[in-house]
Length: 251
Image 1 (cartoon, rainbow, N blue to C red):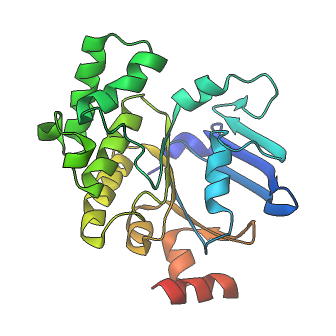
Image 2 (cartoon, one colour):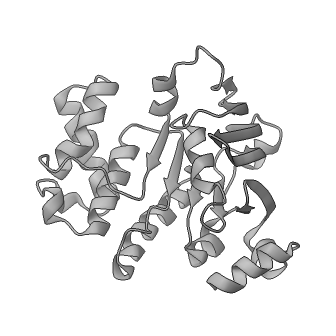
């Protein structure tokens, strides 16, 4: 849950009138949103609503067409911002695991620590072991991606992001490429992170996760935020007909 003092503090992320176009196609049409430290925000919406584009704008994998994003008080959309410094503090887990097939789990988690954070091999290995243990894979350090299930590979990807000591974690459909029986293990790790106070922005179709874990649920459609509120407000008492129809379809 968010820190109770966060209402008076600066939001950890602030999005102001965010627009993103690809050629003639307007994907984001003026998104404004504050995310508090320690908050878990789940973003729902149909395919093509702009959810993943918004997430990718947050760590500048996509450059916004217009608008501003502030992270820990710094405008990261400013022209001379150090993008690498931003990404060090903002972990991201994708739909695809993006692991290096020729490296075992331990070395997949070590690599960015050594290259980006300049940690020694010994320190990176120690952190990697701790994070693999944290996601339930302490006994799989020497397994290669091809020897792991999809769910285990995604948990290695989460461990890799956590090893960078992020202040915010972004999850972009982290379970949608997994077989149904493998989804639960990944969601359990995400639940635990939420309970430990990690600030998280989660794009997902997992309604149960959104109900159980989110502090706030956001429904997007057509590049706009249509509705937002607590899980109870959005799921049980949606104000918008579009939200109501979407929840009816996916429930």
